[in-house]
Length: 176
Image (cartoon, rainbow, N blue to C red; front, side):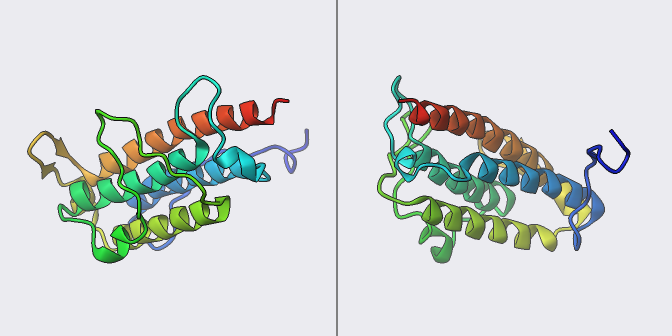
């Protein structure tokens, strides 16, 4: 393999951000790119297909990924309620950790992708204004303390885990 053909694996900071923040957000964006890759050319029927052995449908997981991203942004990072324009992106109630996720049915992939893109744009806009000190400042909530830096890490992990589930669901949906 020639040097021009070999892949290069490196983390780049997103432009327009404090470099340390930009690198963390690059990982978040790379995670989303990979999630969208798993969804590329998916059979539309697979979005709402009932998993053979139980669990969540692909559409439900996509909705959940977007909603959790906004919840962590507003509740933990900004320490406020979701504004009405963000709430409007989530017409279905998301249940708490004690209960299964609310099923989200009948929405096409395009609608799920639009929601994911809209929530990510909000997330990136808010982090663009953040200083490194604010990125690392501990927020004290009733049950735990958290920094925005950890929130970004957590969201990368969260979406990666659900991307694995989505890939398995897609594969199962393609079986005859």
